[in-house]
Length: 210
Image 1: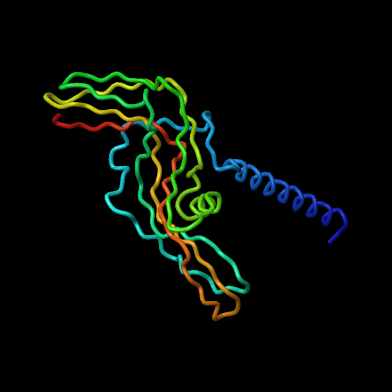
Image 2: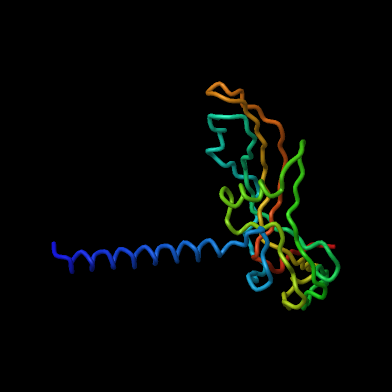
């Protein structure tokens, strides 16, 4: 192979490497480093029927690994699609019986993750684990701005309800501790639940008789 041919192959390889490096950087920048979602990243989704799971779905492959040194780590053991309400005035409405509801967000705020457990935990570590196990879309917080009007008809003789919030996930987690060596005596030292919002936000609608 001549010198010209080798130079051509080298140039092509360098160009391919730069392309792959750029693509990797772009993918990494899609996810905020602090686990939050800003207003311009949110997606409005209203009345997402069928989103919420009736029961939690177990997540397989959460057996603690064999350890080489003393350490602690987290696993996510189940997930459930759920609506995470905004929980402040100006984002929840009731009307009826019958007719049409026309609403909008009148007060801004932030929807944050909720964690509870039987021991001390790291919210950042649980969030990082959920991003790799549940969905890369989960966030530590989501900003809600004013606006986002929405209209929905109410069935005759029924009362309509509209609640603003995030289409997120409720999970269960466990915290583990190990010694060293292959018989490292792995033990569970904590467990709990964590509810994560995502940047997919909007109005949830339902009806009642009273």
